[in-house]
Image (cartoon, rainbow, N blue to C red; front, side):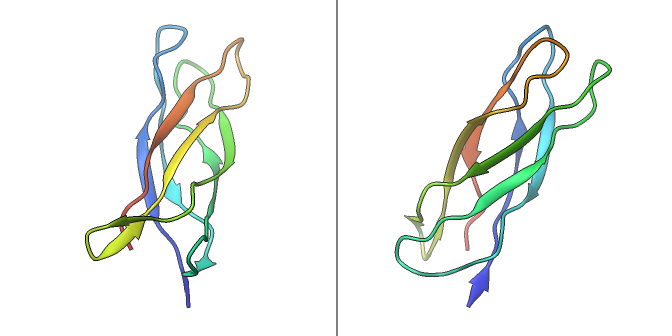
Length: 91
C-alpha cells in the first residue's frame, strides 16, 4: 500500500531572515527500507523564495508507526541558501 507523510518547518536564519515550508512527501510503499522524496518551495519572504528537492531517510520506527528524518539545503537565490531539517509526521 502506498502512503505519504506531511512535513513543515522553518529554514535556518540566513541573510537576516527565515522561510517557512510545508508539504507532502511522494507516495511510496510501506516496505522495510523505503524512503520518500520531498519537493517544494519555501514561503516568499524578503522578496524571494527558495526551492528544495531531497530524499528522506529510510523509515524510523516511532510508536506504533514510523516517520522519516530529512536534511538538505535550499536552492541558491538572492545571494544565499538556507538549510532545512526535521521529521515527517507519523504513519
